[in-house]
Length: 184
Image (cartoon, rainbow, N blue to C red):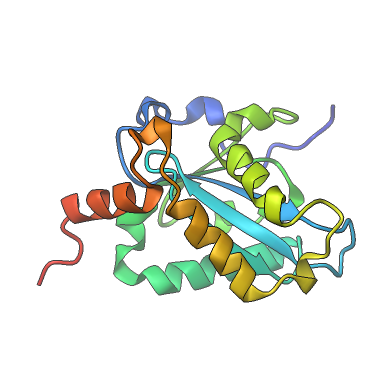
């Protein structure tokens, strides 16, 4: 019960995040294959409104690897990062101990209560879908980048009842079109 809180509590998260009416609020987690520090992990980011999913294979569960992956994602998004990422909600795992410092200039980071996985429920649900393809105990290091990409594409193209049978990809593209990020 002496679990650390790494930053702002989820209790301080704005209500707009909970009602899922605005693009840019993400949940982050890791999917572990082997409980072995040398094994890679999957870093998953799920956008709360659209259920759009990024799955990044990272070298390990250490904070330095998670930070490196997030910096790469930020670089890929370029000047659009701030519009696409407004908040991130994480659990209190050591792998997220550096994201507050890493991203505080760009977005707000919130941390769930210890032992409260339901507070990041969308991401946990998506991780369950990933487990259909990469079961616990399978080395993530042995999973090809192509399989990770196929899982991500499949999840983002799966119609969801909760989205009125639209796909996360369709809804995400609709939302970024509304933001007029990519106009000339």
